[in-house]
Image (cartoon, rainbow, N blue to C red; front, side, top):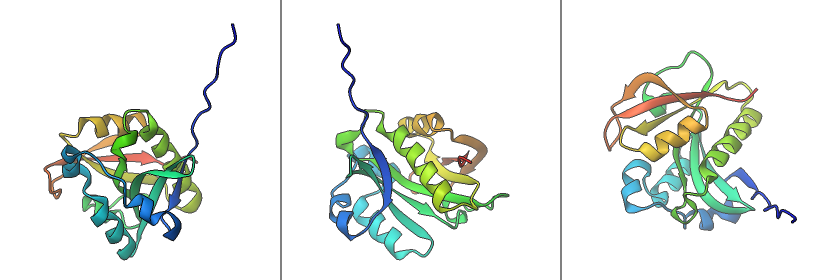
Length: 169
């Protein structure tokens, strides 16, 4: 009996550009998740307008299935300084149609490798995650993020864990 191997989908990340911008704007999460992530219709233009922000698409076999933004000024993430060169990660999400398939962890791994390549002086990535957002907390832990012991209280939906992960060398 021969075993069928299912090809692993290709997960990559890329800066949002004109070629994929319209498709990225069609992405979204459930109404319950908006408290934690926000809406792409606001997040993408804000990332495009902010100096030091990089709007990023998560691609599955070349098609956008998610979004996040990178902040080169990590203080904007948790209102704190970091001892090593650190990048900020915010607004990370997988479109609701693609959730629950293990793509989030793979997307975070792809993002971390991309950041290590494009930002060679950076050593860590910081993010905040709402205390009530158990699925996101589990995802970030699976991807190697660890709580710093601090809480960020500036979020619109309540207290957030501050999490840090070293970039791959």
